[in-house]
Length: 483
Ligand code: UDP
Image (cartoon, protein in one colour):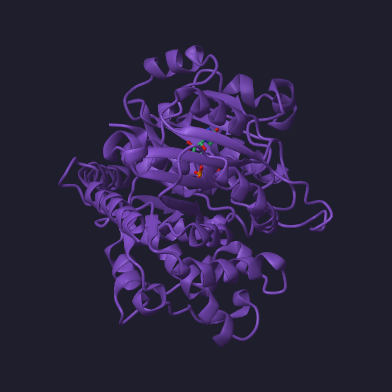
């Protein structure tokens, strides 16, 4: 079969490890399971060591054609202290002409365009080319509901979201507490708020929305998005569940020592502690966490970053870069490293997360609840301690604790105050030692099976949902050819 007779999907990813990973993996699945030709354009941040490594390996794998679009210089367009979402949105707006020319330069004409959440401006290019266009949201369905409802909330809610006394009613969804709202939307005077409202207006201009979730994980939010009684009248387009889409990165570099250590630990006895590709803590919080881990007397692997005193997303654009071992020993409490030598491993900056989570010795994950991390934990049957910091992580944390019952959380919201050592100690023991941990583990194992079921060939809900999309792309392509 020549490549020209296959559907040819062009995918567009915004900068950031958490954005690039689900797009690359979606592309891979379109090729291997549905016989697509796939070209992936990645707007790279060029400051993140982890992101560069991921891109290099994707480029050399040849399954998809991966092309980097250099991020434009936007220093004249945004304030020096602009928020992450503002920066990404402006970058994605500015690359539109370069993206358009890059598409024209392709040898085979694309037959479908799939952009991620921050790429909605480029849906217009598909319009020009008269090909079907989709938005791929790499997070959960409840959050998609908030996005598409954001323009309505913008018109109906007065004042800042955080000062609201009551939860927001997103039609058909569980009530959303003001403090759980996606944090770029909390300050309605900041540009990133308007970027989100704008994205919310653009999502329904697509021909379909792909969500990195599965039917059995979020039946309520998915019904809300589809049903005309609720948000269906806003979205109007099909919702394709395509999750869980996760990606095994493989342990880049040499991690033999870490895995040798893990091999020697008892089954489900180790807590993995990590705050995603961008998460940072304050110095005070790092100190409390260190003491909490030590006091719990449980085994751990902790990915430590240099502190950041202001926001929780301090290393979003620099994931996996900087800070070495020397910085760590001066950062952690005196003697911490030597006292925990036998029970703990401290890793600077970046660790091979999926390989760790899938190791039988790991029994818990203290996580910032990025959606990729959340899915990786569920698909490996690992219960969580949720520690949401930024973006939509508080919504993810609420789903995990209150809806799915596969995680526990602290009384203080980590983005609002410091979680003390005693509480950390107690949470770690609740997950790894106490009776409660066994019940939570049983629930997460059940979800693990449900995730596997969703991707069962032919019959699985996500498998067949993406098959439907693939078929539709093919049909629309033929229709165009007949025009
Ligand atoms: N990741 C990793 N090692 C690290 C930190 C992160 O492999 O030390 C991977 C992790 O497995 C996940 C992604 O980077 O796939 C982070 O995505 P997530 O949505 O969890 O959080 P974000 O980084 O977007 O906040």
